[in-house]
Image (cartoon, rainbow, N blue to C red; front, side):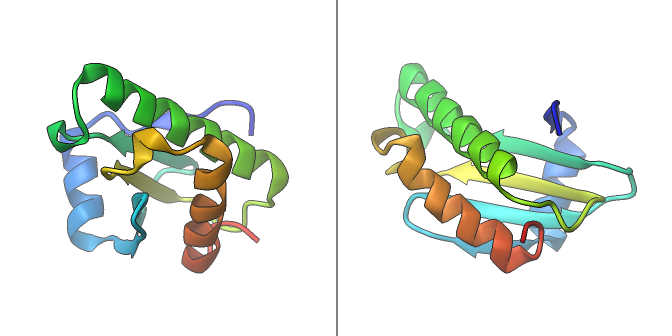
Amino acid sequence: MSEIITLCDAWAFRRAYQRGKSFVSPELVTYVNKNKQNNLRIGITTGKKIGKAYMRSRARRVIRAAYRAVLKDSEIVADHIDIVFVARGKTPFIKSTALEKVLRKHLSDAGVIR
């Protein structure tokens, strides 16, 4: 998978929050929901509780880097899925390698990767 397809519509995020299965850790919350498209899409949310703009940007960068590393090393089992990552207070302060372990656990528990 060379390209990351992102969620852009607010209704897609709301549907993931309401209908999706959630996986929670101190560093990250992951929502997984089925979609009707033929691809895997992701969305990243960082609220103002995370900190100022540079902290929210760092949180998004760390999540994206960890997601790319997980995809590179793992086999995707399920397509037709929307994944929404929600940054938490610890997210900007950890390295992407530490977040990669958390993200790998969330996605394997959800049945997205093997």
